[in-house]
Image 1 (cartoon, rainbow, N blue to C red):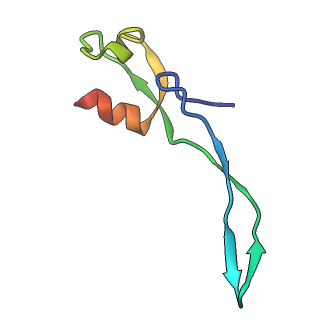
Image 2 (image 1 turned 135 degrees about the vertical axis):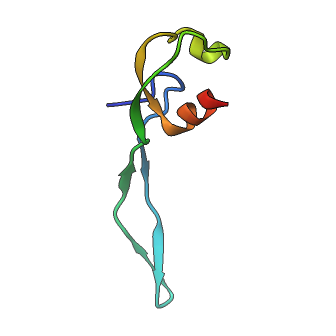
Length: 70
């Protein structure tokens, strides 16, 4: 199973109940996967969470990539 190497975010199983004509209709469950992308962590990174991966290519979720640029 793929997961973010930085924050360990992984897929989750989610489902909901659709209400039709006063009764609940249990719909199927879906697996929701994180948006993982290969990215390069530069050597001059300042945050502690990214120091371990400095100078490497990692699979990271978009939330971590966005936090890296700040």
